[in-house]
Amino acid sequence: MVAWTTEYYSRAVLELRSQGRDVPDEILSHISPGHSDNINFFGVINVDVEAELAKLDTSGWRPLRPAQLRELGLTP
Image (cartoon, rainbow, N blue to C red; front, side, top):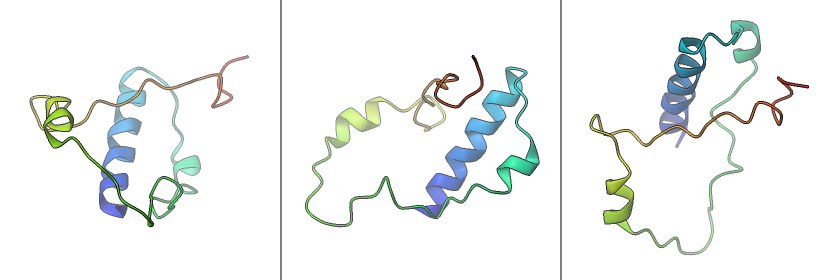
């Protein structure tokens, strides 16, 4: 999970920077891919593999969600 999260954090930062958004390295140094809030360690997770595979782009990546600038405190 840490490797997957790290890879997608990197993709998200590259996407934001390609859009001209300022993403300071100083802030990134405080972000950890080791958080577990998004991981269900208990119970059963049912996954429709075919539906998930259909979401991948031609390079095999899931699409990034659009940034919610207001929630991030980046707009008034």
